[in-house]
Amino acid sequence: MATPTPEEFQSEIYENVFITIIEAKELMEIEKGFKGEPVRQKKKNLSKSKDSFVVVTLENNVKKTKICSETYNPQWNEQFSFFPDQKSSKIKIEVFDIDEILNEKTMIGECTINTDEELFEGWIKLENTKRGSIKVRIKTR
View 1 (spheres, rainbow, N blue to C red):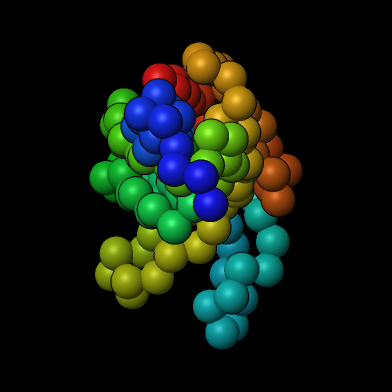
View 2 (cartoon, rainbow, N blue to C red):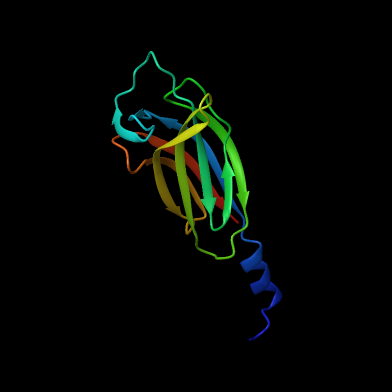
């Protein structure tokens, strides 16, 4: 195997990915069944609170935001740095609701983004849910 040049080595190892989880909107409430498993999503009930956080995964690296309490439109504004092994990787973003009393988490929705672009900022619709979006900023260099 050929030894990489300093330029190749630097571009492969030092390709930083900065991900900012800005906010989410219109998150769905998860209704739980008898055994605590999610059975269906329902429209938000303003008398109940939503405590949510985001898990960001890039390759084998996992980062987690703080919990935003009592809102269906949380604002995190948290930035994470990743140093992936591959030039093009997929970022997995999962939004969870947490019941801090029972110490249980339930996925609200998720999405996957490619790191092909040098800069991206915008709203992404969450998958596996009827509604809800997350706003992210991704910068690579």
